[in-house]
Length: 165
View 1 (cartoon, rainbow, N blue to C red):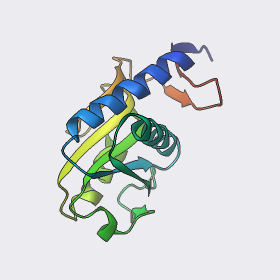
View 2 (view 1 turned 90 degrees about the horizontal axis):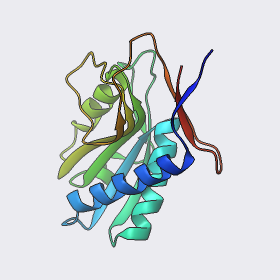
View 3 (view 1 turned 180 degrees about the vertical axis):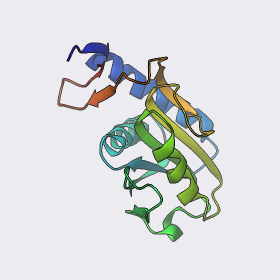
View 4 (view 1 turned 180 degrees about the horizontal axis):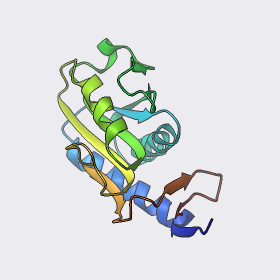
């Protein structure tokens, strides 16, 4: 398969930093926020955002891993934090690629079961092929691709990259 690099390591690092500053600006009035990453690359991106936010802000940052069965998103969703730990807090749900919106919308639905002060979503790549009315509040890049193309994000030490195939 032919791979076209759409984001190289340095570009991903810049986008993570920019998104972190946007999150900080949005949640500047809060004392603490939850960065909830969807298991897999969403968690990796969420951890990178958490680390950057800890460097640039005075916010208390808590990481939460969200386990969603991507083949059956209606199944029970599990989180590494209890509901009490994110109730009445600001929360950002993070995934690497927003493709059809299925995973993100079921993730949002899960967190709507508890009261939150503020709720936002963040993705590295927004594909613009949504089946559901979901959007990314913070995004690294938007791509209009064909439905047959696939975006893959790779997180490796000193070699983060995203490509289209």
